[in-house]
Image (cartoon, rainbow, N blue to C red; front, side, top):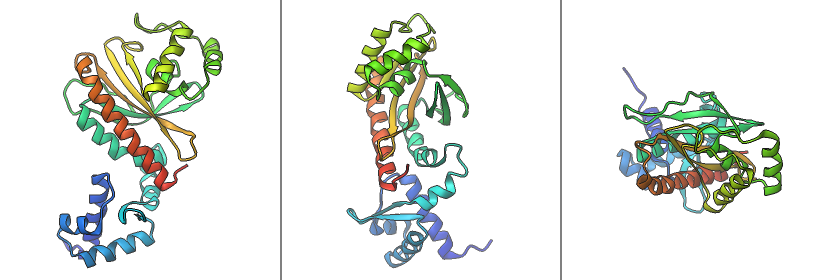
Length: 254
């Protein structure tokens, strides 16, 4: 089969940038792909004209541009957010070895728009399109955290806090205390409050204008989601959340 050399090199560059997560310089791309700097420069200029690649004027490095997201979002149900977050979710799963999902809020429901499952035999599966009640503990804490306490109290007074397990918090004052912790720490934690034998961590994603984009959630069975593992997972989750939020800012996705 014949492959036009320059097209193959362009695809290799795009593939490298998608898989690498971070902005790359011409020199780094040249060394890693064994392509001359002049060829890399020419390909990047062509890709930049089509907005498939953009250049960070501060670092002089290149990264995936909005044009590529416009193409990739057509494949993903969640549009730009899913397209941007997907490689980071895959990276997070490799690091924490638990299932990770991306979700958004629509009124009183939370909908899963992308899922990356852990590779191990015993894992949790969450199909894309799954809808959960806003009162699901870890998601309720994180999605309500931007609101004022009076607004949260009014909302929960109308919706009520269902007792899903013996660990569920059904007292509104206690639940608001948990949300206050969530605001302070930057993540929410669920220790078998929604599903018996299941633990979860979640963080918020925001668009550049400050509006809520969605949330990332790590979900695992208590047998592997152990206490001693939680600090490491929090660190990795917050790291990935920061990277996705920064990418949303850089691409000015709204």
